[in-house]
Image 1: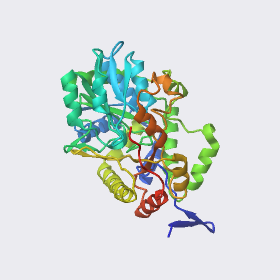
Image 2: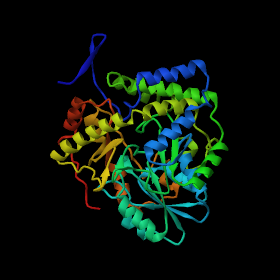
Image 3: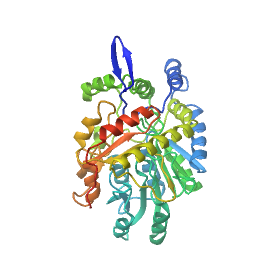
Image 4: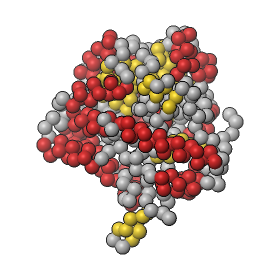
Length: 426
């Protein structure tokens, strides 16, 4: 029987969204305290404490925070001396802001197709796209499923490429027992509201290289501090999302959110300029102290967060395999930490409608460059990565966060039973 809660005489069935479950009421009370007192809202000791704890958990010597992961990547590329005429290999599908960070340095993103087994980079295809100008191999651990790092590092070594790990989906994932992000020259992470932990917006770069760390810190110290009003809006959104994603309310709050469309007052993760591949005026910013404090609280709960995500992902994998879906494959030495669980469906709109009574399916990625007004704005050439283009037409992703219970898993899988989930040979 569908679990439900009685609200003013009506039965309100549970409906879960693609995000949520990373924050607690106690986190919201801390956010509220910052809102009311305004002390140490922007500057304060939580930033250094958060960076130290993140470095420890990520298996790195240094960590440097920024307003967003994309800014961390931009700072990282500059710190490595990447610029005009250099090429950076990166996979699609990815987010437009990743391509933008490369392009803002003057370097050229060279797009590489994914595999349909893991939605990670096709390393054989990456090797074919190496030129004398190729400097960086950017490895995206898509959805929290680690790249085959043994093969990737061997490829990079043979061609003298710098490895950067894109861990925005993958906080908590491991490879050969080590945290992802600890294998390349450096890594960047995101704590934007849809990620494993949330500070509404936020990013952090990790590295073991002291010289690179010094350059990152110098860059960060030259970035603008967020304004008090901007930080307040992020904290309000933090509290709002905690309430809006409650399964007993989400059916109604999501409808109101969608009805509001682009007119809602909450701050957005990606600016209109970025969607067109243009650099926004306020791009280089630091993380606020209040947001660092909220991220730190969640970072200390990371083991239970990841344990629950792995339980949910394992249940999806077992159940979906039984009814004929091809589930994502992990490399032999990898232990994923799926921030969302991706599956291929033949008819995405139909799958979304079928699942909607119980879950609002996530639709990362609907484009090879997610959210871009057009992939052309990221200098992507249509037809160059056919598997990624196909995935962008067929992927849906299931939530793995702590608000998902076993009855939700049963209902979600049942809603997908009978739909065509077979992938074509590409």
